[in-house]
Length: 239
Image (cartoon, rainbow, N blue to C red; front, side):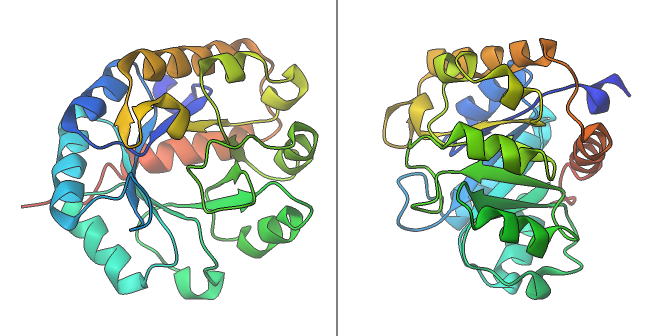
């Protein structure tokens, strides 16, 4: 399937409206991220998360639950209620507690020397890793050490996050983009906290797709498995 094989995997995160979901789908993003983390301006209530999850299913784009230190029961409930396709864990979770999750798992990893240990700890569970600034769980708009990110991306299938927008994707070193399976952006795509700018989303997605002209990364089989898993898990059926 050409859709499954295509690089890069582009995730637009922190959406707040069904219009944003429709925009991401129309731009051919690979997935949208829906945030469940009360301190974040992108946090969604149960009702809003279900509404956007259903909108994503209708638009044919996988929706990823992005959350920090949740309980497993809460995650599985939200996945079922909102028809979500995957889960991204961004806190201090223990991988032992997340074995056998019924949907694919993404793991946020801070770009720091400790990141290599995180890759090893989650290697048997994570479909891919999201490389982000190490100071907070995500959504800070802070950039990462691209040299260290490149070393991490050489070890496992990784998306790059951390203060990305279209211009910053364009400026990334080719040696890094060639190792990535995709890109993930949130705060720098906003006109105000929690409010996406259509023009900035379009610029980011277009720049990320342009990165596909680079040589295929060494984790092509992992990339295919990630895209296939998310395509197969468009979310549980919801009533």
